[in-house]
Image (cartoon, rainbow, N blue to C red; front, side, top):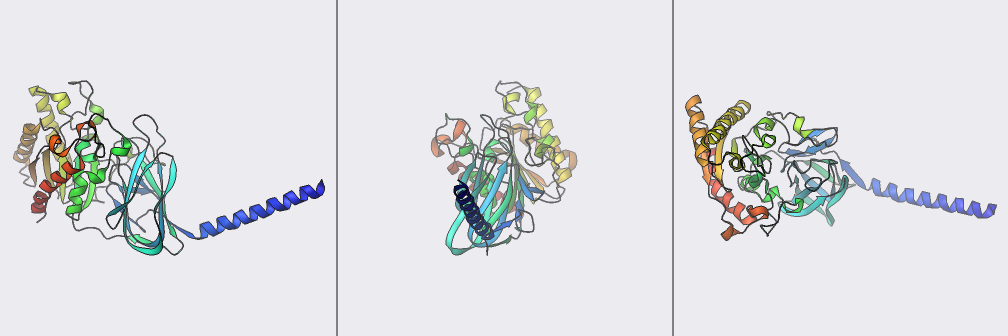
Length: 381
């Protein structure tokens, strides 16, 4: 019996030793990088805290140059979980080509971006494709093989900020049935007009958007009922719209440092959801106009040198007259000529197809971007 126990003990020790050697070899063959500005460039309103990169708004993420055989990213998310919230879609690009498209359903997980027998050298961009109201997230670490290297990319010449609602977020862009509602898997900010415009102009971007959000009222399931819980202006100075904690960060309470990103142009595309409240009532439409004027004032106070482009279109534009009136009123009050208006052709779903809940498709967003880009180019001259 003693000999048997001894043999078991020896065998267990050998197994532990062998496992330890394998683990040691595994971890020593990997090189972990913190997603901080020492190693990556932060995209949009991404911030770092405790050596993690916090991602709230859609489009946040990191970009870096890489030279490695293997590359992976470990991401985490907040702990909220219900029908609408909880999961996060991430996409990654290598030299502009999509090489990873995943949905994080666990609290934390490592995803492989590439694993190649040849050394790969190029630019990697990792993007949170879904909006903050569905979940907040973070990049915990970036891992290469033992000899891999990463370092930040250079900032672009131009910077553009986009403010909007679901039409900016890429809501349901990957859905082909308009009678199907929102799913994490079908939202993708990198297919929205905003992201496409930034790519076409080779510009850095910051995107602030929320599905159902507005200026004086967000969308309400009951027509005519005001929804003040989904208004962009009160949270414009925060890194996100949601109080869902990721790590020790509450994006809805964390101030954004406007010195970190000084846009050449700020594009606003809001008003579709406000109309759910205002309808045709003159007093409510004037309420929207007044709130819009005040929002321009707020944006200008935080971005003194930016051109502010107030847009309508793509989605239903019932409040277009009030947006034009708000621009004229603000300019008359201030003499600020660095503010303008642009109407974008409406999405024609019978030509370009419908996404979830009759939202724009990838084709529709490409057409919108093709229309907007020349106007932005003229402003950047």
